[in-house]
Image (cartoon, rainbow, N blue to C red; front, side):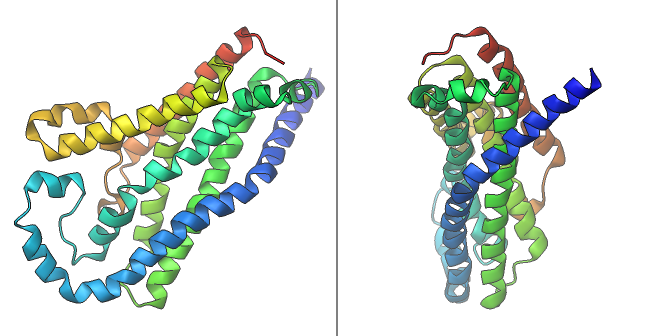
Length: 272
């Protein structure tokens, strides 16, 4: 029994390592794309800093709700500048990395006709779900590390006062938010036979939740809707640090989605 169990865990580890190798290029592409954008914004603070006070005065003419929607409080502070220009929007883009990876894991493999090869190794269905998601979670950390290094490295080079601690908290805080939508995509991938559907549904929820949170910040009448959005629990880690309770809660929900995906995938037929 112990030998069988060890072999099972060995198969799971092999799947995780194999998936990590397949995702390595995507890690670099996503990390470099978002990281270079973040680095460019960090570098632009040097030229922007001198006129930040005047711009803050100009911003006072704007409705307070509009400034709240875009996370603007004090553009003379590099942390608020980076939050309002990069990190408030970054999860909208980076969440598509785990969404695409999770949609490809089951529904995508089914459409390509390769899922029979995977399950014929032999590989239990639960291991395909759990192993694919675990590898995606690690790959996502890799992309976030690239974003953080490019952002902080650029800040150091151009002498912008952005600490390593604030940068690490800003990028790490995106991990559970993105995993939430990756977990939802894994559940959709386990339920449906179409990769497009496993992408479209989480993407719709992603943008709908962002819109709910933004409108709730902009309007006091709709503020009560904000707790229904994941982005309400995202906050601004670069300014206020990571809220570890929210971090753990979002991660837990992502794991719950994956746990639900396991029986859903076990029960359905596979189209080949």
